[in-house]
Length: 253
Image 1: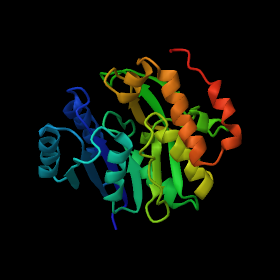
Image 2: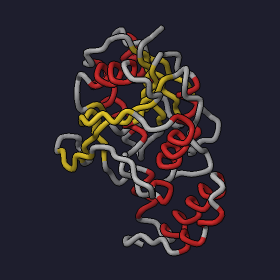
Image 3: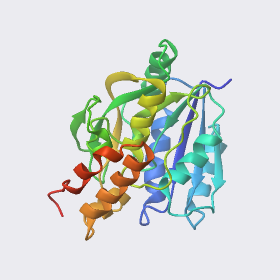
Image 4: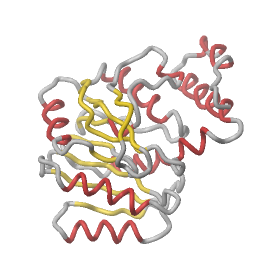
């Protein structure tokens, strides 16, 4: 069995999809752990990403491209398609616009998780601007009781890995901004706490084209977030706490 499957949901990224995916694949190519497969589930409407995947396949990378025409624009659904096609012992989620910061990242993740009795893992990350060259704000994951209120002290799904034979949960396709927090909350309920790998192995790219940034800057963002959190509270039978959602605000909206 392949040691690690890397699940990558992709889309156009406002015309920068090929550039961002190439940055990610180039950091996969130099990983010290070589026993991996890459699954690209493509929501884009052009052929640049497929052509890029074929370039890497021609160089020997075990990489597969899937043209996903279902639920186009739904990031969680696209991520789930990629995960469902993974056959490796460990599944590593990576967003297309993020990349590995450490060339030993896969090896560290694989060893830390397989040597543990825990079923899932979150690693540290840093952040970078659009060019992917200047790095700032290193975040080491911790748990907090308000994670289902969107207080994310773990970071994006790009820090997540899990044992393929143990974790059958998938991202909630009815939320956008809360897809990571809701997933972490649910994983904790079902599987207990994760392995906290306090090493910045991933770089999260912050750019104007990312869906979260577009949501941040949109009118009515606070109500959008409250509605997603209400959905999460309903899903997890937290009806007695619903009133606390009404008071939540975000200072950019």
